[in-house]
Length: 103
Image (cartoon, rainbow, N blue to C red; front, side, top):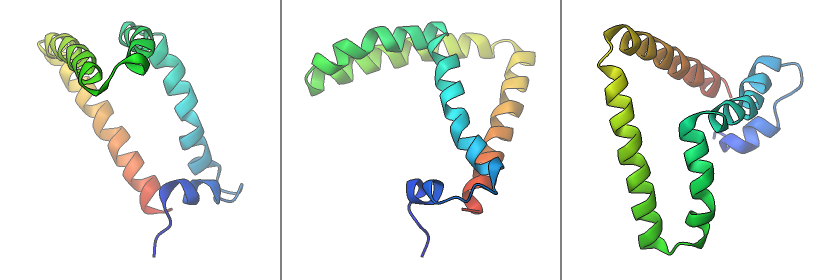
């Protein structure tokens, strides 16, 4: 039986720095995300989400998702950018699957 992901990550021996660095790079991702316009919007939204009831929270998240969807599809109109993004995303997914497969 396979371990839950968190338990597997915590129990990784220090001899496997590739796995550890992959998961610890999440901090770098969050830091970079927080420096983007979308990240700043989410951070500004966090206090309102914390104070909102379920319906209000869903409404706030829906508006943010709609905004991000419009921005995303606007960027995808640029074919070169879309191809580059697709290749990077596919590479990240393949890497994540490889890491999780060997846990």
